[in-house]
Every structure is written in structure tokens, then in C-alpha cells.
Length: 90
Image (cartoon, rainbow, N blue to C red; front, side):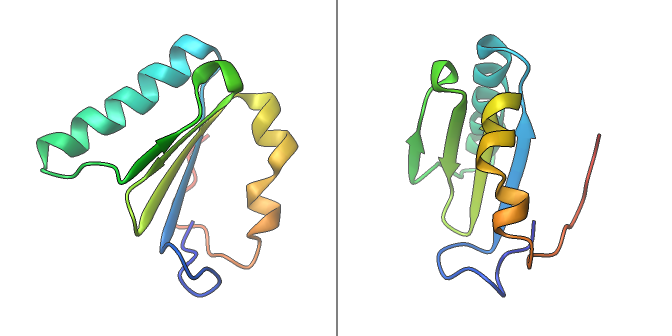
């Protein structure tokens, strides 16, 4: 999501689901690994797979890895509905 017109602390949100705690961890770890290869490290990491939400803060880009229940509960797409969807993969 392109949130730069509606958000003061980031330009983009990346939202994705993992179907299990193991998959949530794997997604978050792979994002960190791939970006580390490019010399990019997160400013902050918050949450755990057990909580159903892992957040990776890269400054202008914030990656949210959700369990399905938590994604439905927090409804970030609705909360930030003024943001433009850049890419949607289902």
C-alpha cells in the first residue's frame, strides 16, 4: 500500500499472511534475509509468530506479517483505505 499521502511515518505498507506460526516466522525471516543481502536492516522488529503479527520497520517501508485472524481483526486495509494499493497478490 502506498501510504505516503495519508501517513507521516512511512511511505509503504506491505501486508501479507502466514497460515501458521512457522510460516509467519519463515516469511519475516526471509524478508530480513533478502534485505540484509542488499545492506538493509530493520530499524525495529516487533511481535512474534505466536502473537499472530510480526512487524518489520524499515523506515519508509513497514512490513506486516499476519495470521489470518489478526489481519481480519486489525483491518489495516480499511484503516488506511485512503492509501493506494500498489500490488495485490492472492
